Length: 263
Image (cartoon, rainbow, N blue to C red; front, side):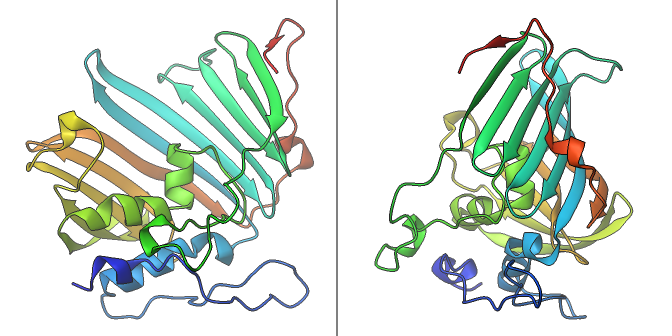
């Protein structure tokens, strides 16, 4: 396996402009026909958002907690550059009032928590100055996404997987398990065995993490975590629409009259 510092270079190459657009173009458009290396997979996935101008993704997630199984559904809309909407719903019942909305419109972020009727609107949080300077060590440099998503969220992990690759997966032994169909799409499965983590309870030798990278577009379509052979978290993409026609109203949020504003 290549050295960890070589798996996911933090400094992307200079990207040529797409004719007629201001968006950058990916360096690699398709994967080789043969099974790609882990380095090729990670680089391909990191550039996935550059291959589309817009997308809609639905992620279904199951998490085992002390209270039992928790189900969440994440619906993500993105239009480059600078527009995104993420709705996270808990439970499987419809309709449900237990949902949260995160909305990005250029540099303003609006949030709404339906169960508590709480809303906020504030400037988007940005990285510290110099976060991508070349004189920083590779592990400390970050990448600016084309369109931001909620930091630390599953939506951000699936569409901007650079942090997952660099800070989690490459800290343990990696191997390609093969291909698997996920949501009707071919995905290449990579397993990280006992990756290091900041969470003490899962920092153990029987902890493993599988990720599925879509062969066609490069987006993450599967994330499965196991401890002691038991699946503790399973998240997979059940719907993925690339370059859909997105109505302008998608990136508007109408708050109820009784919503309380925090900011």
